[in-house]
View 1 (cartoon, rainbow, N blue to C red):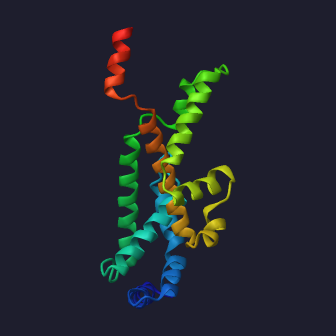
View 2 (view 1 turned 180 degrees about the vertical axis):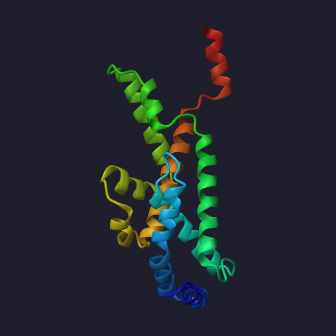
View 3 (view 1 turned 30 degrees about the horizontal axis):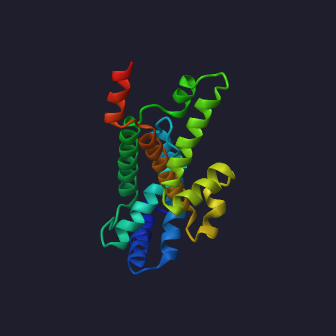
Length: 196
């Protein structure tokens, strides 16, 4: 199949998708996800899962097309642009993190300091409880029980891509909630400094 035929078929699939045909989205995904994955791998950034990037890219394309925007033709070019945008956004978001989990582990006391361990657990539990129920569910299933997003998608009533995106957002939300829970309010910090 030549490049012109692929492009022509993509235009037909996009038209069907705009008309609400979910099977057309599945076909676009099957056609282009291997290429999107290879492209994302070629631009890979440390700490960013390529499968999460692919899922996010196709989710954004689906939303764009369903809302009347998105590509009309040149699907591959559009997908590459979305890959670049997703990676840029996620890299920028990671810059805002104080430390990654490996760095955090280096600063936690190696000895079993029960009070420190208990405080960390309480912070994590508080952060987890602040998340929306859907995020808590997907985090529990993926991070605690060890399921891959694709294996629990049907139980959650989502596509495998949407489940991967949900899991990624839930992890990011937990990280943000944990940082917020661990911050000492300014007034309290000043009172502590006065005592020292």
